[in-house]
Length: 88
Image (cartoon, rainbow, N blue to C red; front, top):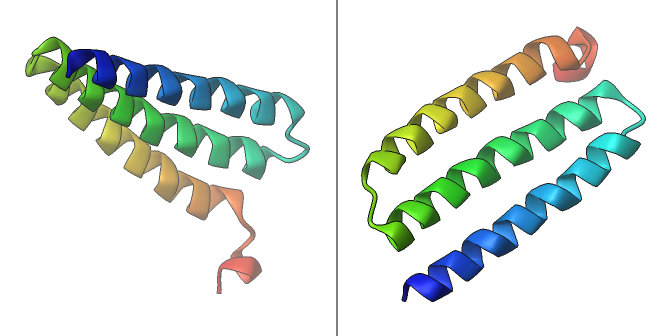
């Protein structure tokens, strides 16, 4: 079972690598911020999968902290990333 979970973590890591290509080619800062949100969500997923694969429950605490930081990043993206007239 842990081999399958490690393979899932590898696929998620490849997803982050593909996101880095998007950030490198991003024409606008908003695109880069959305990619950073993807990194946060995928990073949390990688940590949760690794916690299950390695039997390390303390890694779930790190994943929770990353999820909270990703939520703050999402709020910052909406508040500072889009003009006020586009949000309403």
